[in-house]
Image (cartoon, rainbow, N blue to C red; front, side, top):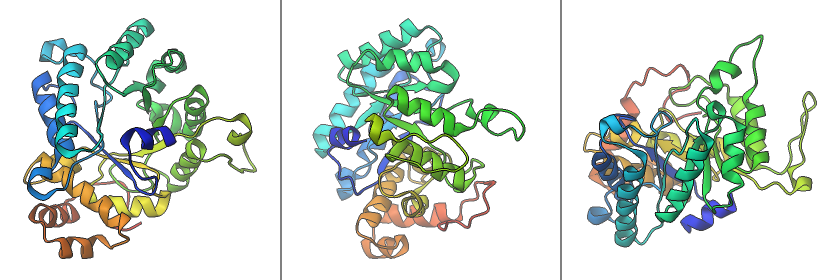
Length: 322
């Protein structure tokens, strides 16, 4: 966890921000790279408010030659855009390409290519591709941030009478040596979730010890196993930043797809609205008061739009509350 904050040159008191390029599949390499640029730059040139820290591939995007989005060219073009944003803003930014492949050797080749191209992170769909794939990447010692996506977990986690609880997968990810992993979101967003389960998963990956009376406990401090960064996502926007940090603490990554690209004025405005919400948390200001005092048109519009937007969430918590 410390290594991630160090790479981004960010303060450990603040939540990190990310975006997922939407639509998740079907974009050309050039379109993908341009949206990454917009997501990271935000409204910096107009209002000195940059965008998100991370941009990642979605779990279904790996290499789609038929759409003009093969893995290797996408990584090359996107990392060029990342460098441009860093030069403009003076802030570190990280692109997280999905290296998942059914052939472990190809996953390793992709990870090595990311390093050669100047990248600093890679994503693995570690539940569906298996612990062996995750472990193979980890053992290459490439100095990459390993980002774990949990796609397929629900098929095993949610049945009430049989399956594998996600806390088991979270422990596996940390034991193998991953760096940041999807934890779920506590009763906020569009995915059905149990708040207590999510909080426990975040504790498993981020804390040194967990005390439980009904299951196996691991003292990570004794084993000297480094902590991971919990990642929340799915249906989040600027109104979710304060409730999430209140529930989970500041050391969390908050990823928004539609909450960035769905801004009425476009991706850059949406990305900077997320940054503004994180700044409000840092300044210990209520988001509504922060919006009213900053008088930024893109932020005013984001707040009014997303506060009223009905995402048909299965979670019953009122917007902006937890």
